[in-house]
Length: 475
Image 1: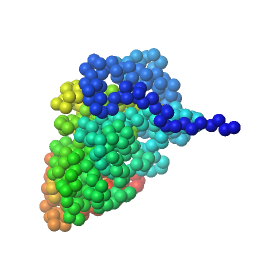
Image 2 (image 1 turned 45 degrees about the vertical axis):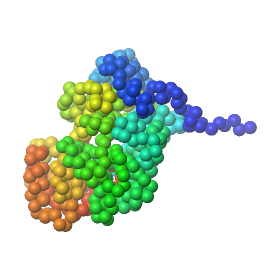
Image 3 (image 1 turned 180 degrees about the horizontal axis):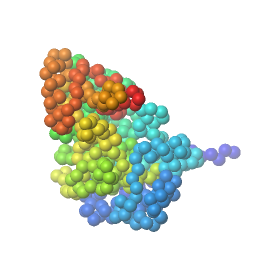
Image 4 (image 1 turned 30 degrees about the vertical axis):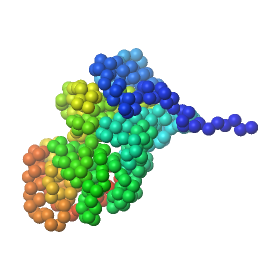
């Protein structure tokens, strides 16, 4: 007789405990979202200590921490967190290479694949296999709750038709949105995927036919859809869009946001998160910086060069510690995203949290140009500010010359809105604007609309690339 039992997913999750410990909206806005600073710190400390205890049983952490001179019991709470060394995605890649397929940082055996309702998702992977991260049933649902909190704070409600233009594939962003909207708000997910799955014109046709009221997509793709609408005579305002939920990027002065809100006649809300940690921070209806999801993640801002913690109000790399992830633990992950953390405050919306700035760039994409650090994502503000551009650009770094005369060449390719735009005038103005904003002179090339998509991936994939580094190909 076969005694095999089916490990039903719904039986794996203790739903009562889950929603008590990680309240979804609207309960979150009446409970965890209003804790005092002392209450939140105590909750974070309790969860942090539990994650540290688990991490000591994981080879990746045990080896790294022992090499740093730590022993079990040395880390007694968040006050000791800076004694723990940080790690980056490069370290995760090394861990996977050392112990394929999942790495020394993920405490998993083949048996666990049946016992723990595990999902395989990935990040990166422009060359070779992408970086794999495992998610168990609890982490998937908590990520859904994190996302639902953000979407609810931004106005998404039960019955909204929610068009998701991230692809439900190996990447995490679409699944966060799907689970958040479907499981924890009651909105209707419309999973059209990226432009390579559903072309942009069809995206708009579907939105009109099926009554899309809200979108989950990148800011760049919202701009692309607006451009397609203009080219085809499609009336975006007739869609009845109520909200645009996005990752808007380094829009420091809000130029891209204003262009999008005018084009779509709807508010744009910014969010921030990562593949391994999930949603980290979100704007509310006030649109005044981003609330940290403090009961699920602890954030430090560290100096880009030294790694030392920076005080609130100063920019640096985001270092994240997940307070809920056990498979795998994520403790002091230097994501190399540049942002600013602000002092805790009670927002007009009622939430009491620390806040994060807009996304300011990635430190690992820095290019040294004539002694000045240049960050490709920092160019978005100047490009999106000029209505003669499509908002699309690509930074290309290469070598030119030979021997002692060899030097790095840095060119910013910028798409003009149409052939009616004077390319020479736009070239001169953009060169001056970029130098004024960033303090270094760069070469500029004006290109035609849509010409950069091959390299940026706009509309074809979940992430848009702003740097094309040709130096290794030339060496």
